[in-house]
Length: 466
Ligand code: 4AD
Ligand code: MG
Image (cartoon, rainbow, N blue to C red; front, side):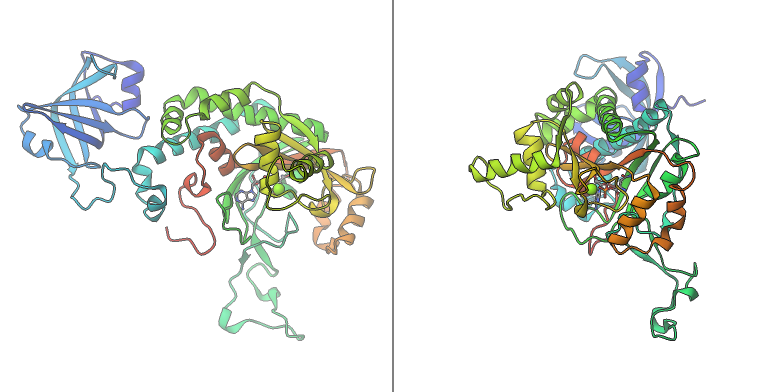
């Protein structure tokens, strides 16, 4: 029986003096007079396996000419190595699956991240992208591990929905109506009663409202982790039209509990990556951001800063007015914080993740709990250096009358949210939750600076090629 091993397992178990078979792709091939050295990677880990190819191999000539990215299966003896790697292989047999030709787009020379976005179907083969995506995988695992450990239940909320959870109107429509023959009502409006679901439906911008239904009165603590869609027209390095969000929701949690939960979660993600993805983080740090690991270690061991929105605006205004820092926009109470303000707070002023709370109600969603001042709500945004907003969350308004009044004030149709309002009629309790933009977390931890480089197939305005 063939003793197939993943390269990762070769390094974990170091079975020297045994004959094993590995399968993967050629990362590089160096020829000397009588030998060739092949670096082989199979995706299982960051480190390649060094394979010594002896001139005596039956197909040596063919093997020695293999180009980068060619696929092979190699059987050979594992031996302790004198070089950088703890083990290497002496090949006894090489089977070639596919020998690449000269036109393979990923040659040894470094290619720019911009160019790689144009060949997104191949970019996973580079060291950078395989490192980023192994880290992304680990962060997803760490997410389930963390919330399970905190007694949250994983709830799958729908992708197709009739409600605009954020009330921002940035939704993609789902419809099977024939665009050339749109059915009309007597008044001339489009008749959605004849559409597939008999009403207007959209791709979800957040699973929060549905998650609340299982947090209150049912499972108590739930979290969702799924794709979300926003048709906002922001072509920035931090926005996607399709992104993944992690949304915990907990009955009885106050805003302070919510902030503490978010802090534990972010630190868990960092610690998990630091232990499980050391090789990948070191590689990315060396290539893109030498300080990254030190910064992550620092964040994992320090407190996050808490500050109210009102205080934050004062800090940013003071920095602008005293000319300590240059901003494009002057912060003003009542306006949303711009990314430059968020980054100033986390990067320059506090120099650590910063949790801004109690925003003006007019710049936040309808479901947030009103403070006693009648002007601000129990909202929180977690801002991190280099990115800005990583998490948005709040304590929810649990009082039926107050929530209805707020929705009417915002001209929302309360009848469309009857089921959401029911949660405030039956078994209502204080509860809180947040949403973490998963790609932003991957950016933050890998140190990548463009969100398009941490999701396999980015969807952004005017871009859905792959
Ligand atoms: O602040 P947001 O809009 O909050 C919500 O959706 C709430 N329903 C969450 C909750 O309380 N359950 O979005 C949450 C996070 C943001 O902080 C950001 O990290 C990310 O989602 N996000 C985006 N990430 C990538 N591209 C976009 N277009 C994003 N919009 C939001
Ligand atoms: Mg937000």
